[in-house]
Length: 162
Image 1: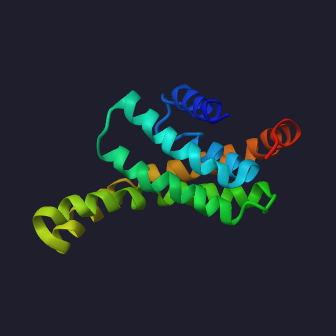
Image 2: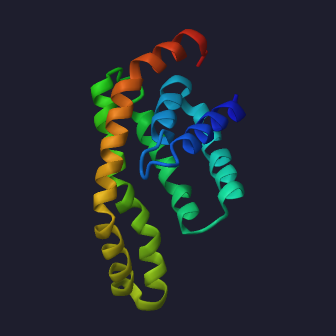
C-alpha cells in the first residue's frame, strides 16, 4: 500500500510538472492522513527518499525532510473534520506558507557564514521574492482540494480500510 500511495503522488507530480507550484502532493498527503491516520507516517520518508533518488538531493530535499512531516502532523490533528471548505483553506494556507517554511533551510545556510544576521539576510529575501509563487501555490492547493475532496474522499471511504 505504501508503494501505491507514493506512486500516486509521484505520478500526479509528473503529470502537473508543467505548471509551477501546482501540485497534488499536499492533497494526497492530507487525504491519506485522513483515511489511514498514523500509518501515513511511513509514507513520508519513503516519498522523500524516492524524490531524492529521482531528482537528486539539494536544498529542496532538505526542506522536504521537515515540510511534509509537518503537513501530515497538522492534517492528523484535524483528521476528523469532514469539510471540503476547511481542507481547501487548510491546504491553501499550507501552500502560502510553503516558501516561508522552505526559507528555514536558507536561514541555516546563511547563518553558517554570517551568524543570525547572515541567516536572516539569506532567508528573508529568498522568502519575500517567492511570495508571488506562494500565492499560486495557495490558489492551486485551494482549488484542487475544493474540487477533488468529496469525489476522491468518497472513493477512498468505499474502497480503503483505515
